[in-house]
Image (tube, rainbow, N blue to C red; front, side):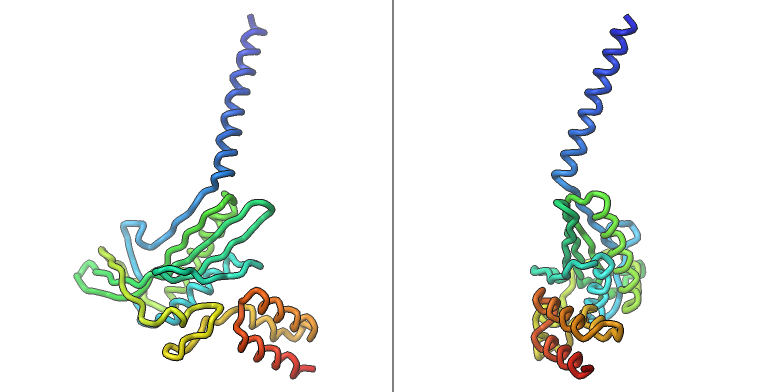
Length: 229
């Protein structure tokens, strides 16, 4: 009788383990997603500023927290921002940061205008992916607060961008009307004195092949490197 009970227990345990394995497999295959925004909690807030260029630079800089060797790309759509995809073996994770223009109403009824970041992600890296998004989001809050004033609001409505989209594209020249482009970190590393001329030229070629710099940026950086010969 005891042997029969042990056999039943083993069989039940096996079914439980099988169920857990199937559930885990489903999660791994289907993946998961994240979504973070200052509007998710009861204590909503936006960053009040009219410096749209600085806001988009802050968003790009926040994405560097998860970049590693992954290129950062523009998001095409009504809400502007940047995205990157990281891969480990067969798994992947795509992170996105969107910059929302907003008009908020404070507790006292004042109308304030500014921006807020939204960080989201999806993929099959169910541990590393959400952790990376958390770092990007925390960096975004820190960098947005460096260029704008954090103001609590009770209601938020969608605002309008001040500048044309081309002002913040990574891989295209800025429009003549708006001027300025996002400063890409990759170009800064080309000035390292410890790198050989050959290494710096190769790094520059890599940036160009991945469309991370414009043709003008490529030519200017190459000229600067060759001047060191």
